[in-house]
Image 1 (spheres, rainbow, N blue to C red):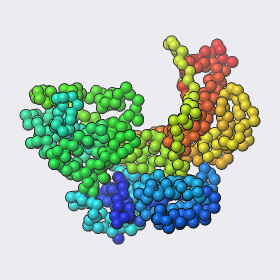
Image 2: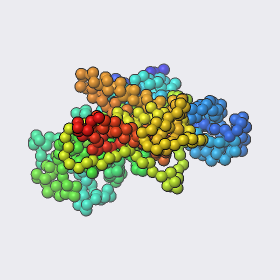
Image 3: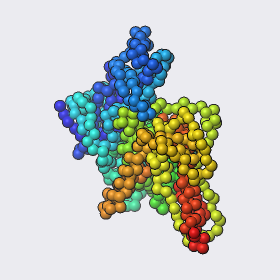
Image 4: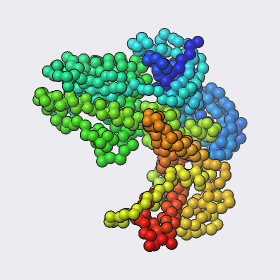
Amino acid sequence: MTKRNMILLDIDYITKDDKPVIRLFGKVKGKSNDIIALDDSFVPYLYIMPNGDIDDCINDLKELESAGKLKINVLEKVVKTDYQIPKEFIKLYLTHPQEVPQYRDDLWSLDSVKALREHDIPFYRRYLIDNDLIPMGELEIEGELIDSYETIDSDDENLEILKLSKSPITVNTDFQDLKMMSFDLEVYNPHGMPNSENDEIIMIGIDSNVGIRKVISTKGEEFLGDEEMSFIQSVRDEKEMIEEFVKTVKESNVDIIIGYNSDNFDFPYLKDRAKILGVDLDLGMDGSTVKFLRRGYANAASFKGLLHIDLYLVMRRYMSLDRYTLERVYLELFGEEKIDVPGERIYQFWDNGGEELKNLFKYSLDDVVATLKIADQILPLNLELTRFAGQPFFDVSRMSTGQQAEWFLVRKAYERNEMVPNKPNMTKGDVVRRGNNSGGYVREPEKGLHENLVQFDFRSLYPSLIISKNISPDVLVKDDDLDYFAEGNDIDLDTDEYYVCPEHYYKFKKEPKGFIPSVVGDILDERFKLKREMKACEDPVLKRSLDVQQQALKRLANTMFGSFGFLRFRWYSFECAQAITAWGRQHIKKAMKEAEKYGFYAIYADTDGFYAKYNPDKKD
């Protein structure tokens, strides 16, 4: 048996002999060689909530199998908590993940089946959750080294293939130093928007943190000897240019390849041109080419074991800008203008030669330098969110913050033996009937120039309310109403048993602690601990790392509020969303009223804070 410590970069599964085989892609710790670990021991499963007697339900399942409509691997009774209530479920193990949607309708049709649960968690994500594996972290693996495997067609002589004899173990969740490369295409475009069937790639820019920085092009020989242009690598034709790009990526053995709008433009265009010219984009660790996977509403370019990150998608979620061009984002982050060439004039700069061609080369290089610089700034936060969500970095970089928070909760639910809810099935009619949430309190600013101002804000207002008022769907009481009502946001409606929100009068049990508040509480405790460590830290590198970690936790905690009102959120509760904002409005109004006693009069307020003007003459 061989043991290895690997850095987990990617995961998927394939089918061999009608069985699923998990593939873990990574790097051997302490070495530069790649490794693919194979695990065929994990099987898919789902939970069945019986409608009535559990043994009757089991008998119906066996009859369904006898009728040829179900193939049971293993059946077992398990107890899990469902919205804080212990319940007995049937855990149904199947043989292949594709059987879950295949049998789902027949299972639902049984009168003895009340509900199916956790049937829509993708197989590879289930594997990560159940084995407590953290992508980008360090795993200890053990098994047999094999020379080849039928789904792996790599020309990498240093690639190791390990057939696992037992499940991997996470030994370190600290992220390692990653080798990164940015790239960008410049395309000939005399007719405006380029067409990959006719318009050639004229430059491929590359920058990296492994010492490679260049622009590959079919022109540039005229600049030989010009030290300023020494980054140019001139090739014979477009085919050789793409081949040189592939060779560079392979030889550098980078972990992450980064583009800007590369899901929508660079990789689709490169794939089309490579196919026309007969070039194999076999950059996957298993020797596979680029594949486009559906992520949200778009397709994402993916290589097995080589992580592709599109910064354009990341920046749209992390910044609020009028436009999201590379130039605009770079200016916002670094306060510097990068070299720019109008897109519609690229072909003219190429045709005109001389100084304009030289500027085009500089522009191409500046694009990839800027992209890598943005990645250095932004990706650490995404890596931390990968740690907390426990899902592949490729997926997390393309998730909304709500999805990241949901996968974090799914993982926490598994740790606590809590059943994960199904996604709500809301219709447009349901949305119309429920109405809109009023949101945070806003007071429009008083016009004019003000002095003697103070700023007041609540620390983590919404997450703190979730914790302090135990706001969670599993402790929400829906079966009765309060027997009294009150007007005004400053009146305390709480009882010995319940927290009662103003305006809507929703009741939340004080005991037990709700699932969401307990998780948010853990997040905030960890965040404040990191902030204390950051304050005491004198090492600038460690200080930045701690800051990135606390920012990731802040993002997760703040996302919980918005997720409550999201129609596809597993823990969706419009009542919880309304209660949070109602208590938020109450708190800020109360704080503003209290401030007036000391001579501070609010001139502007928004959600969790306000600006107040000091007038000592009006102080109580």
